[in-house]
Image (cartoon, rainbow, N blue to C red; front, side, top):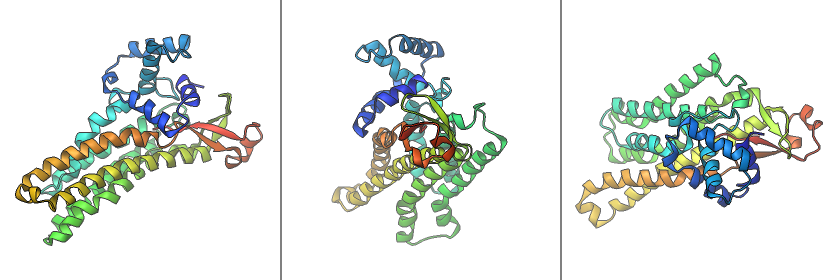
Length: 316
């Protein structure tokens, strides 16, 4: 079992412990760590990985967990590492949620956001579903289609307002404040399901309690994708609902009524804060090394182990 998976096997068994680990992993100061720094950290882990109370070893683990893919053992592209998710996607989220005056800017920012999300999902998937670690032509087309569809669907509220010439304030408020909430959550989950569809179709590796590979399971692959989709929908859905609710409440306050210009910065700042707070929470909802009962995997795998539960890498 890869060292990163061994770490998750021994740590992060509760939500709070996973949250604490993710708060350390998401430190943005390690985004630009070089391959040599990562390799040095990995070497230290191989030698002294069990000495978690040693600060150098602890820092090495955080760098490995944040920068190295748990299936391939190779460094993840810097822009798609977990600690880069907030600084890269937060501006895109804010720009996507802004009430645009036209369809073109809405499509542009949705395209940027959906492209990055698709790339992040692809880079942090369970790579055992594709042994050569390269997407097939079918998968490349699915990813392209996902970005195109999500871009159009994400800009749908603005398209409705512009193309249907919606003039009613209540209808505009619905399109700009209510509709984006379920839309954002559904599109986030949709992107995960489609981009990582090979895991459900081809299966992913499952391990016994000793870390030995038992085989490849499609059931485990579907469970890994489903859990990640739920966590991503929670992240984007919450990020959409809280700022809109806050702005709605502020509109009723006398201060905001006297100073309506303050609503826009409040919306932007609250979106960034909620998104930043929700990232470690959403990443911690499910264990990185998930469990699946033996009776829920394929029959040919059930006879290969005596363990009641098998483990799989959930991805991110």
